Image 1: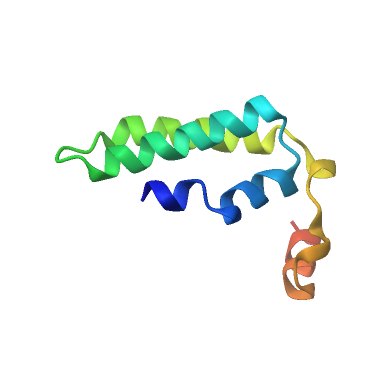
Image 2: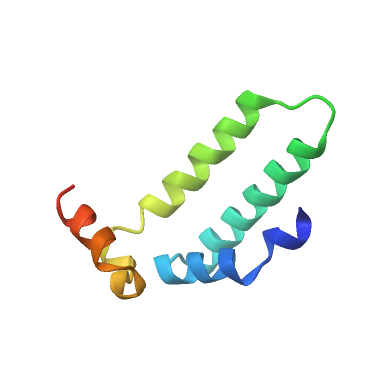
Length: 83
């Protein structure tokens, strides 16, 4: 799982969202912590949920101007515009 954590898709997503370097590093660290937790024998579901919420908070605090929607298809843009 660790190889997938640093894959271009995660880094590309975080860059596209427009996170600061420190927020991007924290989201990657959260991803690694969750991956390690999922590989353990006794998963701390509450701890993983808290990490997920922290990552979501970091990403959503960027605001709508930080997201480049140009690469998304038209159907997704229509759904986004109606939210």
